[in-house]
Amino acid sequence: MRWLALSLGIVNPGESRLSAVAVLDALVNFQFVKRQDPSVKELVDYINANWEKINEKTLRYHLLRMKRMGFVENEKGRFSFRQTGYGDRFDAEEWSRGAFESFYSGVAAKVGEVVNGLKNKEQLV
Image (cartoon, rainbow, N blue to C red; front, side, top):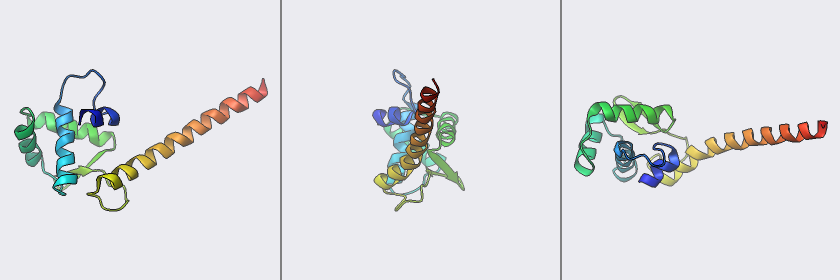
């Protein structure tokens, strides 16, 4: 779970706090194992049972941060990973494919722009 949190940028290398990892684990458990969208209380209960104790304020901080990063959304007090419009929303592979396809296509377009800009600059010299 720590590797996933690092890969997604939810935690930084060398960071010792595990609360963000615990929140990510809880979301993965509810979305892809239990196939449901949890409430704050359900998330707190899961984290308290499986990780160290977490208070609601810390949980909400991490949920908001993940929401701003574009990974999490909430509706009517229930949280889930942001829907991508691809396949079954409770399927981890479909979610990851949809979530990262749009992200990486944007990165690829920007890299292409930069390389073309450098190429054009070189042609002017």
